[in-house]
Amino acid sequence: MIKQPIGIFDSGYGGLTVLKEIAARLPQYDYIYLGDNARAPYGPRSFDTVYEYTLQCVRWFFEQGCPLVILACNTASAKALRTIQQNDLPKIDASKRVLGVIRPTTEIIGKFTKTNAVGILATTGTVQSNSYPIEIERFYPEIKVYQEACPMWVPLIENNEHNSPGADYFIKKHIDHLLEGSKEIDTILLACTHYPLLMDKMRQFTPPGITILPQGQVVAESLEGYLLHHPEIEAKCSKNSKISFFTTDSTEDFNDHATIFFGKPVISSHLSL
Ligand code: DGL
Image 1 (cartoon, rainbow, N blue to C red):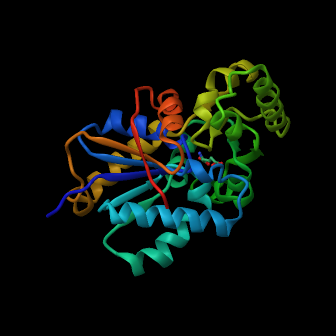
Image 2 (tube, rainbow, N blue to C red; image 1 turned 90 degrees about the vertical axis):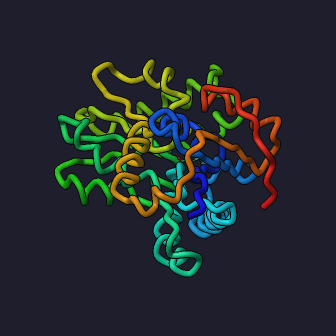
Image 3 (cartoon, rainbow, N blue to C red; image 1 turned 180 degrees about the vertical axis):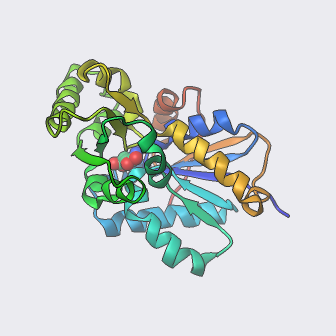
C-alpha cells in the first residue's frame, strides 16, 4: 500500500498553531501544510466563497495523495466541511477523509467549565454560522454559549501587528464585550486557530480565574484517538517525520511569519491554484 502524508489546511498561518501541537504529539507521521495566504482572511467571506476555496485546496491535497486532510481552520470547518464530507467526498474518492476542528473542541468543552457558561471568540464567519452553539448544545445542553466576533484580529496577526499598541484596543474591546454577556463565563474558547498568538495580550485583559482555551492540543489529542480507532486510514499515513509547507502567496513572507506560529524555522514552496 502506498503511504502518504496527512494534509493540514488553513486560510493562512493559523493552522500552524495546530500543526505544531499535532507534530509534537504525533511526530512519527509526515505532514503537508497548506496556507491559502493569497486569499486570507476567510473570516469575512461568504459561505460559497469559503466552500469553493476550501474544496479547491482539499482537491490539491488529494492530488498529493493525502489519505486524510485536517481543516485546521474554524472558518473552513464551519462553512465548508459538512458539504465536502457529504457531497464532494463520495464523488471524489470515498476512501479519503476530511476532518475539522469544531467537533473535537465542542466534544470536550464541558470538562473545562464549572459554571456552564462558555465564551467563544472567533471570526465573523464562524460566529455567523452558529456552529459552536449548535455543536455544544448536542454534547452539553446545559452549557450557555456566548459568542463574540473579532474581525480585526486575524488581519492584525497576518500583518504582524498583533504586538503593537493598536492591537491592544481591539483585543480589550472584544474581550470586554464578550464578558459583558454574562458574569458567569469561566472558560473562553479561542475558536480561531490564529488567536493563540494573542494569548499573552488576552491574559492581560481577562480577569484571573477565567480559563483561555486554545485548540491545538485538543485537536492533536483527538487526531491521535481518530488514528487509533481508524486503522484503515492510519495504515495509509506515511511515517518519516517529514513536514512540507506550501503557501499560495509569497514564500519569503511565509517563511518570515511562520516561525512565530510554528515555533521553528519554516521553508515553504509556492503553490498556484
Ligand atoms: N484561522 C482561521 C480560523 O480558525 C481563520 C482565519 C481567517 O479569517 O482566514 O477560523
